[in-house]
Length: 196
Picture 1 (cartoon, helix red, strand yellow):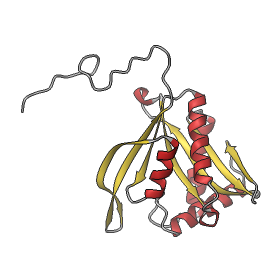
Picture 2 (cartoon, rainbow, N blue to C red):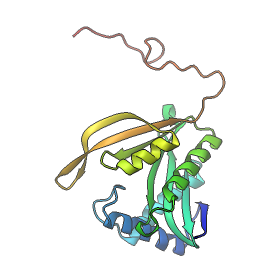
Picture 3 (tube, one colour):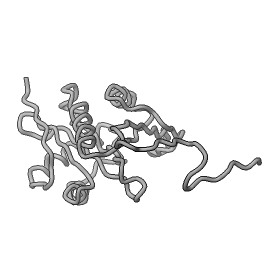
Picture 4 (cartoon, helix red, strand yellow):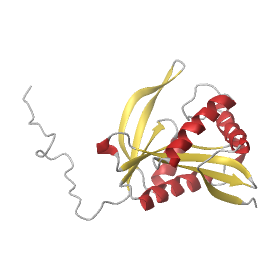
């Protein structure tokens, strides 16, 4: 049975860069739906890591790695929402496990750790996007508690093929006294319906 550890990154060593590049490169080469059309170069992944880990050090992200027998085999991160009205939520992204490590539960380990970390950090909502044909990932997210909240048909382009962009969310908890208005009329930013 392999030894599996979850580790959080704030800095990337040369070894981290090489191992994470291998994960992303091989996932993309195997057809993984992780945002690249073709396998990225080591330099591309290194630049992405630098940006992501700066966000971690600034408190705007968390970067998790699943390490199997001492080697990074899975990754994922959350990022804080961008503008002031979205600072209470995080987007979970770049969830992937190396093809040779599939079936070890690394995706679930990483996603659950990111959700738990975001909740402990005080965020109220976790959200993520997934390609509509990635049924296994959608089922994994649903088992963790995510629910679909939107779907843009055929909005993801891969060559001449189009796939649905599915958005999912998970409430993490609201501070005491939070007023949940949903879509009811009234309050700041409200406008009346117009008969058209």
